[in-house]
Length: 253
Image (cartoon, rainbow, N blue to C red; front, side, top):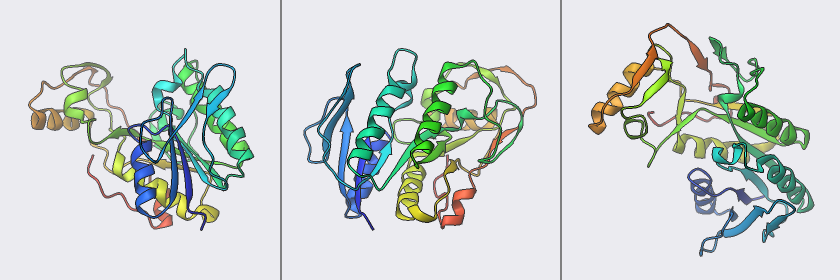
């Protein structure tokens, strides 16, 4: 087992993965745009022309966990990803794993497995997500499509409080806890040769949005959100395929 890992984008999700791998005895380098002062920390940032970095691990697994903000219109997410893949190749990577999003799927009702229809989209964010996936898969990498993330500092009763949501109260929730995502990432890297190219990571619980957010807001003592409609809608992301690797979802959303 090559127990080396480079985490590109060691933020809210990436850093706990770096820590989990280090706790399992992996040699880890965790990158940010501006490095912090700790032994895991390295710099990796695209300045518009070139990749500025001090990553040195040879034959490591690479995890790209750059945050969704990096997929905004004014960011150079794809350029950064392309340059990161080139660097990983140069350093003879053992494998490359991309954190993508279940936002790549169509918005229509349905039960979405990894073979589900991708959004035919004018949305720039979805286009960037799909291009990023293609780029990584074309380099022999693998992709995790993450559902909506919850966890420490990202509590639904806080981030949704009092908001006017554009969705229906009857929509189903597709969410996953950060700790399950960390465990899924470690599971995939530990079984790399047997692993499929793409997995959805989404909790098997799909409550109605109204019930889910009302319960979380009640718990947090915050005002529940309002919804644009009450239309019946059932778009379910199926995250069960990864369970074939012995993984199981442990954390309530």
